Amino acid sequence: MRSSELTVNDISRHFGGVRAVDGLSFSVEPGIICGLIGPNGSGKTTTLNLVTGVMPLSGGEVRYGDKVISGLKRHEVARMGIARTFQNLRLFNTLTVLDHVKLSRFRHARTSLVPALLGLPGPLAEDRAAADYAREVLARVGLAQYENAVPSELPYGRRKLLEIARALATDASFLCLDEPAAGMSESEISELIRLIRSIRDTGMSILLIEHRMSLVMTVCEKLVVLNYGKKIAEGTCNDVSCDPNVIRAYLGTRHGERTA
Amino acid sequence: MANTDRNRIALGALAIMALVPLFTQHSYYLFVANVICVNAILVLALNFILGFAGQVFLGTVGFFAVAAYLAALMMVKVGASFWLAILVSIVGTMLLSVVIGLPSLRVSGFYLALMSTGFIAVVNDVLRNWSPVTGGVFGIMGIPRPTIFGFRMGSNLFMYIFSFVMLALVAWLAIRIEDSRFGRAFKAVRDDELALEMLGVSATYTKVLAFVIAGFYTGIAGSLFVSLHGFVSPEVFTSAYNSLFMCMLVVGGLSTIPGAITGAMVLTVLTEVLRPLREKYLTVFALMILLVLRYEPGGLYTLLRATISRFRGRRLRRQTPPAVATVGGEASAVK
Image (cartoon, rainbow over all chains, first blue to last red; front, side, top):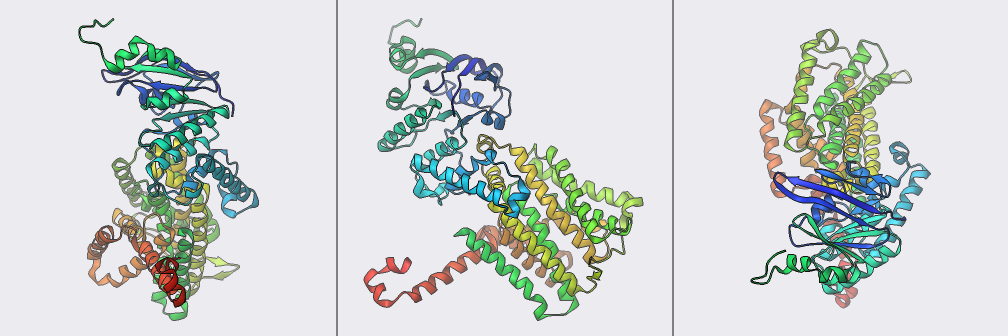
């Protein structure tokens, strides 16, 4: 599905007196991989939660293409073509790998309950199509041989891939990845890099939160850097890594140096 | 595979039920078998809410009471046939499920548990006090048995055949639902509501749908219940009665269809066996729940599955020719 531009306009989220996200604005142009980085507690995951409608905004607006998506219910945001993975895995513990991905097709199914139960040819064909599609997506992320396993039987890195497969199978055009490489081995990460690029090559946009700088610097075409809920830099990887504000946020200030 | 095991155990349980009339023609035993059918259908309803969708709603007996009274009123006061009565009861209970489900499913966990217990109390009070319609504490009497093409299920044997066919039908339907995309959605809303919503499926819609399907089952159970007993009064529809059905589900195997049926079979028979204990029988049930939770949280269903695979394993080993076993060792025997 073709992606549109995601525009985040002056969004805020306050928890009591804490401004987790404070007047943040940025945009993700269609078809790019945009990294969202910053030190721990800088508001990255909160930003993702605000964009995907998981928590309400304290202020500001999020647009996808020409539609305002802030204020929509969670499943309505998802129906706009936005999918995500979670920092701490949120899989369905009792469903098989194949069922996870088939569930992503739920909202694309046309047949209602009664014909589905009577086993009419229409719903049966639809279910087969969903299974075929799910298997295709599983093959794409390299989980084809695990289709009958439940999440607890998968190694950690594979569970992370299952979350990506589940998000992809919704036919989303915008994918948010929250620390996909956490807990992955080096070889799994190089696989992940290939996967992220192949996803982008289908025309999807990706918003990526990640702590592994090697991964971020390799795949991202644009970076947005947060610190204390505010944007401190935005631009290409090169621009951002030379930015004095970014260096200060990550490494601190030299002894005796005055902060600007 | 899990699904074939499920279908086999469900089929096995139903086969045992089907054979009951061959072993006994005694009216009392057939009556108990009838009660098993009604209970099993209600436990299947409970399984959709508590098992598959994982909502701690403890008010199923409230719906059961409404279903039973709707059917009774249709047959006695309106003079409708059993078939019209069951239709009204099903539709009415499904509608009520939406009305109760929409507001109460905004909360979950303890809050939902508390709310649903209140729901039973409210239904019970209405039934007791709305005398002109419900007959108050005396209830409604003279509810007829179902008739098919003029043939009346007067004896407990014919009533049993009728209830059993109903149970078999709705059990098959439940399996179809579990295997459909709706069944997957119910389990997903239980496992992780937020993750399901991020797939573009409304959690509220999913939960209310589970309620409505449970309403369908409850409507059938309620109609069979009043037709079987011939009368209905408010005193049975209490929270304790609700715990009995939850017991059946947990002992049988939470979130499994064969578990719901086997649980209803075992515990209904046990209720009859323990009748001399009067209300102390609940102590035995409480003990059973504790034992199940401690030693086999999967309930009877998991026990049966383990037995099946052990049986199959033994048979497999016997089939393996000794020559192969010595050459291939353990690996060939396992395969």
